[in-house]
Length: 406
Image 1 (cartoon, rainbow, N blue to C red):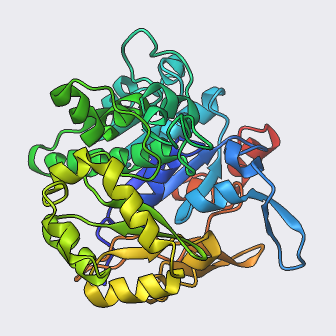
Image 2: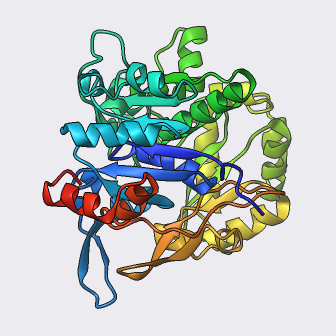
C-alpha cells in the first residue's frame, strides 16, 4: 500500500521538537522530508543526552535519545545558511518543494532571504509553515520560548498537580513536552489543510503556528469552566474537575485509575462494589450531584478500595464493564498486550547501531500504509545524495565541503 503523502517533498529547516515532530508526522505519512542541519553540529537535540544511541560495539554515538525520538523518516543534509551558497542551495531545493517548515526566531530567515515572501516568489505553490513560541506578531513575538515556559504561561501548570493543601501540592509540568508535541501535530494538520486547498486553487499558503496559542487552545474544558462558570480552575490532583468518580484510588498494594463517564456507569460501579444504594442516594444520583458532594462520596469509596489488592479490583471492574486500569511505568507500557498487538514499538535498521527502537505513529489506515523504512539519519548522511539530485557534480560537492558550506 502506498503512503498517503508519497508525492510530497518537504524542506525541514526546523530543530529541537515542535518543528521536527511535525515533519516526522509528514515523513511517516510518506513525504520525502529533507532535514537541513548545521555543518558539524546538527540539530541541538543530537547532543541532548545521556542516554545516547549506541553503535554495534556498544559505544555512544553522537545522537541523543531526544533526537532519535523525533527524526525518523528524514534525509539529513548539512548546509550553512549564513553563507550565500547555502542560501542559494535552499532556494534551489525550494523550486520543486511542496512544503518548507521552520522555527527560527522571527525575522531571522527574512534577513537571510529565506522567508515566505522570498521563497514563494520562486515557487508560488509553496506551503510555508513557521513555528515559534509566540507567533509572528504581538509584543513577545521576537522572544524565544521552550515547552516548560509555555506550560507555565499558558495556564497548564496552574491546573496540573496536587492541591496545595495535600502532600506534594503545587503546580507541576506535564511529564512529556506536551506543548511542543501538540504544536507539531497542529503544524502538520495546518500543512495538510493548506495542501488540500492548494490542490483546488494552485496557490501556496503561509502558516503561523505559536506554541502559546496552542497551549491556550489546550485549556479546553478548563477554559470553559472559567468562561462560563466564573471560577478560576484549581489543581485537583488526579480528580476530574467535571466528572466523578474519576481519579486514582489507593488499593491494598498500590493505586488504580477508575474513569466513570456517566450515571449508568456509576450505578454499575456501585453494584460491583456491593453498594447499589449509593447510586440511588440523592447526593450521588447524578454526575452534577456527585461533583457537588465529593467531600462525602470520596471517603466512602476510599474505604472500600483500600480493603483489597489492585488485581482484585481490576478483575472485578473489567467483568462489570467499568473503565479501570493500572498506572503503568514506561517499561510496563511496552509490555502491554494491546500495545504489542498494535505494533507501537518497532526496530528499524540503522547504519551505526544496526537497529534502533522507534515508537511508531499511531495512525492506521485501511487503504494506505505508513512509511517505516528509514531510521533517524546520521548528521549529513544524505548530503551528497540530495545535492547530486540538484545536479551538482562530485567536484562541486567536495568544494562546498572543503569550504565548510556543507
